[in-house]
Length: 336
Image 1 (spheres, one colour):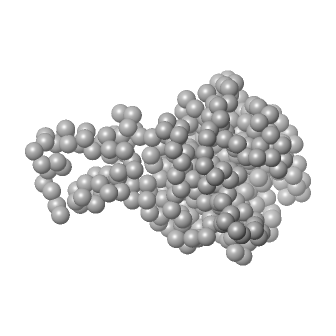
Image 2: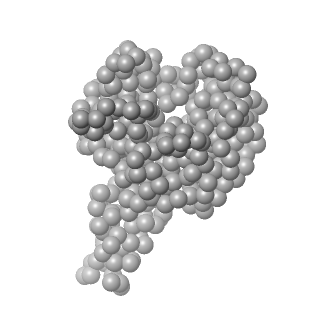
Image 3: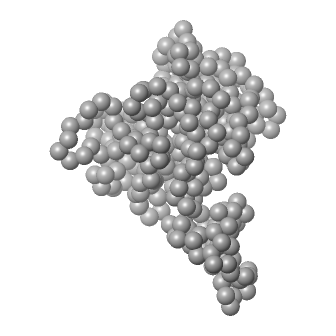
């Protein structure tokens, strides 16, 4: 079916605004009304218009342990899926599995978001434990996954961050457990990989984040210093294409994975140090005026979830059902 008008009987600009106000959960059905609606709802311009006028939804996308089936005992490592938490409504949802991995995501894969899409890359095959170079993109409009171009090389426990439709990755280690100093950039829209200049040193198990127009690679360690997390960070200036080193950006000896926050003074801090309730296995995701934080009070303790107003804000407990109570390995901000 093809309509010449967006909504028959309404001026074009009013019809456009009506569609702009649709909740993202209705996009999948709305995109099937006709070809024109489908093309519009999937377009970058429509997404940017919704974002500009405040009709997008800021949520936390989480790589989270899936519940063990009733009556069965855990066998081997936990199985992980993608959950989405909407702080405005308090709603939880599960993202459909990646078709190539219907029984659980690659172990230790990275998740980032780009213009309302989720991008999952890397990790270990959950059956063979072999590292993979796969890239998968989930479009919330259709709630479907597509396969992107594979990563140029094997890279596990690497840093990742997104800006303006591009995902920046750096560090980690290769299939032989050699720490890496190389870096790449993935253009989500073009489905193409590009090469960046290398960092000054190897950084395995580093953490990535984007601050303004800079991609930060925090801490990590070299091949010959397993677990010896350094206190420095390396910053890729996206505008100039240059790296610079920042000393004493992180507390040496502390793992930065999933727990790096940025304070109001621009300095890095660990979410695990904000409150004793999340000192073990912390994960923090910035959500604008809110931050989602998860963790346990002690190793092996119950995993709990909180919202906080910022670095020094009080933790407010988030309620969830048993299905969404699993350990959160990592997460990212997604604006849908």
